[in-house]
Length: 427
Image 1 (cartoon, rainbow, N blue to C red):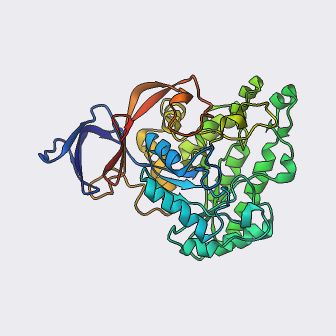
Image 2 (cartoon, rainbow, N blue to C red):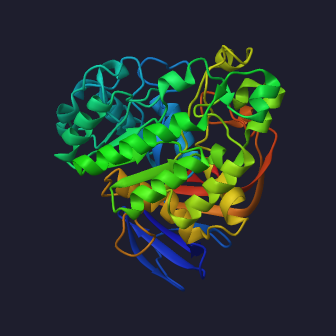
Image 3 (cartoon, rainbow, N blue to C red):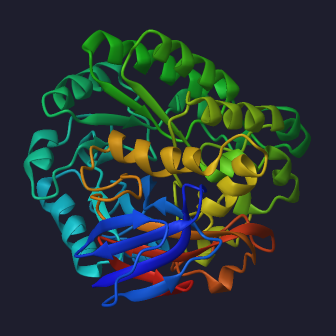
């Protein structure tokens, strides 16, 4: 397939044309001509590399009532993503070569975006024995990211062994930083609001203590550590210190932690219940600054779909989590671009280039230049979108942005030159 994209603005710069042929970007320039091509009018649209998510819950196998690889990757494509990392807390857990290969094959069959399974660090994500890390790394899925997300690898010895093991094949351990004893029965951020609402507090130190420990372990071993969904200002300071030492530590922040605060819990609406919890306005400001200055490497959605009955209940028994694939780019525009903290080149770096590098994805995260794979997102930053959960492509509807008008709209997504979204609709 050959496409000629007319007048797009690569990384928000000067307008030009982009010629896609045989799955590659064949040529870029001011005015291109290709008589055999399908022409796409991209006047006013920003051309970004296809987005890469390091943290997606696709729920399959086992929780197909909430999401499937098919529906989740359709939602990813609708949000401008060309690659996602599917977290391991499925049923059965993705802790063997067989399960990660099943998820990988389901992604290939769906074809909406690349699916890279994340392998569990421990068997059954129970924190007792290491999972089959080497077998998953050697499988057809070529797993390079390992995480017990949803649970913390709280045993320091196991965490050290995991870091040592993945070093042999340039893998990375992605830690869900949550000291379990400090967060027993925790419901929301510990602070003035939790005291007022009478909900058990979730202290910032529960996250920060694990991050500090694991940075030291990663340095001791000489291995790669990635910190999932950073949520506190204190965590940022620890990560900044670790990076200043030259240690191999990277970190992510979710769109919802860049935009929402713990004050929303005042409604007692479980749509705002998430792990880690929404934090204070000061934490949100610190997270934005850290993403802008590169202390936090990337944005990851932590797309966490749940069936309606898991959210439409009282706060305490409600499931934790929010969907986010379809709204991520719009939230980043609102939080980072419209505030002047990032330009579109910075968005491309934080939402494509860096996450692809952390996940060791050779075919993703390339800037829209001649010779690069045609993984591309065309985005209209001038559009405004009223978020309607009923219109979600995801199988679940638990978005915290329902009823809000957010900036921007994905116009087209190309996966190796093939449109998965065109004119704002799934292809």
